[in-house]
Image (cartoon, rainbow, N blue to C red; front, side, top):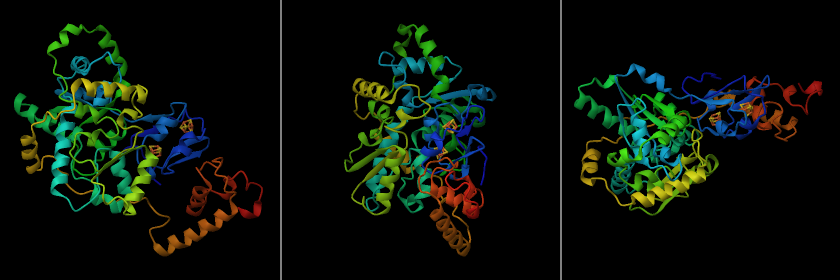
Length: 424
Ligand code: SF4
Ligand code: SF4
């Protein structure tokens, strides 16, 4: 079982962890065990959903993201803030103020991701127009959902829309434009996403549908929040009149569940958020129940990206702020549709390659051995109390039985079996 966090978005701070089992009980893929009183992540099973980060009461689950200092090596620095950032500072702070402040925090350029969100919405529509036979088409925006499909629902990979998410498309475009305009080598331009979730970092380090990400890192909204807030308080608002404003409420709306499909002409769509509801709806897709649905948008965080674990604001307050911004900026399309059609034809938005299946490792690669171990697991299950208490360090009795069959746990780990010496 791999124990490396190198390609993942979270790690356990052993000094802070008290082994309370909250994270282990909430992990949807049963990737956490408690060993010697501390949580241990089995990274092979981790999909970087961030539930453990959300659930830990002791801040012992830490995100792995980029620090601003990591950008020093670049000659030209670009920030692409997720529009979620606009929802973090209350209703009195405008996106223009936030973009202005960011521009003065050591970035040479700040690009509003909402603009690319609207372009990608149009590209999705063009794709749906041209692919009428396969349904439902599933959004590729949330990197955790794509990884979940790759791991738990590999047969659904062909339904994932082969269009890259806005953050990647924005970085691709900016790298090309800035390199040409300022005569800077593309590799000397550092482009970072300001992100509400650590999973974006994984999609940068281990992209699933391209050789290399166009982004160089992801800074957490949580990490950058205080400095933005402090600068906003000091900002002379009259300076902001000429600052570029986000183009539309459609792009800003992408931060919430349902936002991706809101500006589209297709109405036979479903939006789902949260880990468990996403798993349930994907099970329905697998069972063939959603063939009349045009587009399925799944976001792993509750209520969408505004519920990301690296945000600061209560997600319902954030939702209210985004709704107000949508009213202010309007929900009319402002994108140049002809440009999007041209870029679509040039395959600007397209995946570079298809997503490989990567199912979770079974009990054994050898079929005969796997059946033997499955029988062993079932026999062990009969000896366990079925209370799923978690005191053994595994999330439930079935997982402990599997761990015992795999030889990484012992029947004696069960507090109810202890002392039953002949069962060991
Ligand atoms: S929730 Fe998990 S990481 Fe946090 S203290 Fe409890 S066992 Fe440790
Ligand atoms: S990020 Fe999600 S899948 Fe990974 S250990 Fe945490 S809860 Fe489990």
